[in-house]
Length: 463
Image (cartoon, rainbow, N blue to C red):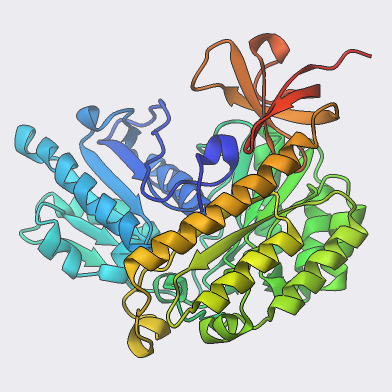
C-alpha cells in the first residue's frame, strides 16, 4: 500500500503519520508514530483512546513525550528496516530525558518478537496487535522493569469490542476495522502470522462505530479487513453489512479495503451497484498475471478468474474505478510470467496500482520452501517496466476525466500550497481545487480542468 492515508486513504510503508495535536487526561504524555496500512492507523486511533481512558495525555511531538510508541508494519523488509532506524533516532530522547519509555507495537512486534530488543537495545516494550488492552499496564510496569517487556500473544477471540470509534482521525474519513486476521495464507504474506486467524467484528459493534463517526461530523467511513469481503459474523454477510452501514444517517460515503477476488459474490456486487453511498471504486489486489505464479503464491484464483470478476464489476457498475497491487520478482518468476502480468495490465487497464518487488518474509511458506531466485537487478528492471506501463495507463485514465463534473469530498488543505484544498471523487481520484472551494468535510461539484497521471485539477462548477 502506498500514499498518505488522510488524503489518499492508504499509508505509505515506512513513512510515519503525524500525531494529532490533542491532549487529554493528566498522566504521562504519549507520542505515537504509525507505519503501514489503514488497519494500523485504525489501531493507533484505538490505542490513543485506550490510553486516554487510562489517563494518558497526547503529545504532538516526540520531544514532549514521556512515552514514545512506534506502531509498525511487517509486510515488507524495507518497512522493518526503516522502523529500526527510526527507533534508534527516537532512543536519543531516552538519553536526554531519563525515564522516557520507548515501545514497538503492532505487526513487526509480533513478527520479530524477542529479536527486536537485540537490534533495538533501547526498546522497553514489544507488544503485538492483540495486546493493546494490556498496553497501559505494560507502560506502567516498564518504568520499573529491569528488562524489556514482551507481550505478543495472539488471541483468536480479540476484536476489541467496545473500542475504536471517532477518537483520532481527520474529522472527514473514519476507519473501522470489521475483520481482524486472515485465513488465506498466501505463500508470500506474513499477515496471518502476525495478526492471527480471521474473525469478524460483531455488526452491532461496527454500527456503533459508524454512528460515533456520524455524530462527530464525519462524512465517510472506510471498512477495513485483510480480505474484507470475506467478512462474516453468524448469518451476516459482507453485503448485509454494507447495506446496514448505508442506513446510518450522516454518513454519505462508504469505502472498503482490501477485498479478495474470489469473495466478490453476486450479492456483494449488487450491494455496490445499488447502494448510492457505497463508493464506485474497488482496490482489488491481483499480484501477478501468470497462472503459474498465482498458483505458487496460493492466491486461489487464476488470471482469467480475476478478469472475469473485473468484468462483472464493470458490467454492474459502469465507470467503476479499479486499482490493484502487483508483486514482481516472486520466487521462480520467469520473463514469460512477467510478460503475462504486463498483458493482464493492458487488458484490465487499472486506474492505478501499488507496485512492489518481492522480498522474502521470515516464516512464510515461500521463505520456508521456495528459493528467492530472481536477481535483484532483474526484479528492479521488471518493476520499472510495470511502473512505466501503469503510468501510461493512468495518464490516459485521468486525462479522460477532463471536462467532467465530479462530486468531490474535501479532505484537507494541500500540503504543497496553502491556497489549495485536496478532495476525492467517488472513484477515489485525488482532486486539487482552489482554497476557497470549501472546507474539509464539504462536498463540492468540481469541473475537471486538467490532469496528471495521478491527480486531477479542477474548479468549482458553475451551472
